[in-house]
Length: 217
Ligand SMILES: C[S@@+](CC[C@H](N)C(=O)[O-])C[C@H]1O[C@@H](n2cnc3c(N)ncnc32)[C@H](O)[C@@H]1O
Image (cartoon, rainbow, N blue to C red; front, side, top):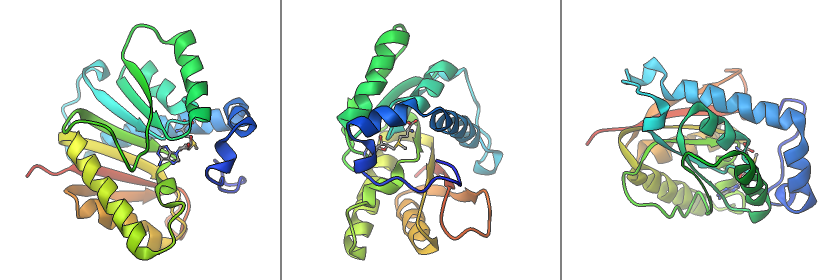
């Protein structure tokens, strides 16, 4: 996604031919990959506190909403052990084709699953990333009560599956300040600490990075 392209509509823009189209867009690949690199940098942002970083191959990272695998590919090539999930088979299938062709040796698992219903055991991930997908977890919700419930339940699960001192970066597209604050408070109420970054501080919605770390109890 860039400034000149409007936000996609979920799930229509990721089904069938649209999934193929997405996967073939050079600007999309470039954007997703650059954003992923930026998010990896943000994982170790000193404002979150010092992190004694080892070789990436020591870490297990979850890529939530992996689409056709642009973000996953970057993480894998950096050396991380990666588990990637997406809710749409049409998108995941494309990622899977790339995996068969290029990735054979290290851990890279692709799973059909929803961000809001994660099938993982407690405390298994060192890091979690989500690039251009997290806002979709409320796509079919209009009542504030149900929005808060899904955000809160998801944040609680994310806190549970992250290891102590685990970190998470979410790049997403809230519609406005009010929506951004609903997302932020869901994390603050579930044992996360952190802050957000917008490329343009005056923007009301649009591209936002949430930099979060799990607090030690
Ligand atoms: C912009 S695309 C993919 C971005 C991906 N990071 C990449 O590198 O291509 C957003 C993806 O989020 C997925 N998505 C939307 N809602 C989801 C959910 N609840 N759980 C998992 N994936 C979801 C969509 O199916 C879509 O593939």
